[in-house]
Amino acid sequence: MFKTGARNLITDVAGLRVGNASDEKLKSGVTVVRCDTPAVAGVQVFGGAPGTRETDLLEPHNTVDAVNAIVLSGGSAFGLDAASGVQAALREKGIGFHVLGNHVPIVPAAILFDLANGGDKDWGRYPPYRELGYEAAQNVSQDFAIGTVGAGAGTLVAGLKGGLGSASALLDSGIHIGALVAVNSVGSVTVGHGKHFWAAPFEIGDEFGGQGYPSPFPAEARNILLKFRDNVAGANTTIAVIATDAVLTPAAAKRFAIAAHDGFARAIWPTHTPADGDLVFALATGASGRELPDDDAIDFYATAGATMARAIARGVHAATPAENDLFPTWSSRHG
Image (cartoon, rainbow, N blue to C red):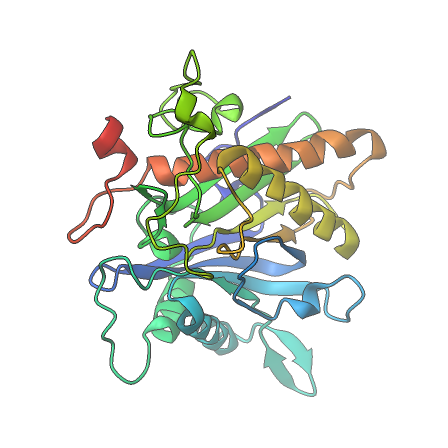
């Protein structure tokens, strides 16, 4: 059906670069997806506790249908400042929506809760996320790290460290799909307390350990492994970007974001809870020049979900230990 792109990163989608900025003491950070030229965008929120900026303009019936960048940030509501830093970096380069002689960078953003993760959040009067956003925007490249970095620097899942994950797919049609995700879910990404990822059926090669599914399935597989943060509303959230080099309309971009949420459901149990602000942005750079044919639409949207599931597992699999961690990494627990 498909294989990975050359990097197995969202930047296999032509026209995109990614930058990270992290603060180890803070245990938090920012990730930016920069569009080389304005990209058609959409968004879908399925979690019950989202924190966002500039998402209303992405509805298909509204005027602005293309964006310059997308920001994923830690810091809960404080992290919304990160988009201002990215805007500043883009404005310095003369990038943005042109209106009455001004450049206004269009930078939608979403945040996750990582305040109670063992990091030092005593930052003084102003939070550091604006500067982290500016730094991340300066760091954009086609090659970037995953795991404990950027918006994934301080993330947690049920009993393990989370992380920043990415994956890509190349369809037989020549269209690329890429996913980027900061995994900070209420639910678990593994089957019970074991080493097997829920996303196993979609794994390509050994990209997140090659463990497959357990056989037989443990009785605990259906258990809901919560209670590690008292399930406070808004205290988690998985935020993501799904991207393609296909030519999409704004309405099709929204459908693309909806389809990518299937990857959440295949990689995290449970997901889309009242305590998660789960959100997916969609980007279509159009760089391939290929429009989506009707007979390829099912494969296209199914691959969006599969690629997102793989990115979620890769982010947790790539997490690395750090001082004052509340939970172990997947690799330190399961090797």
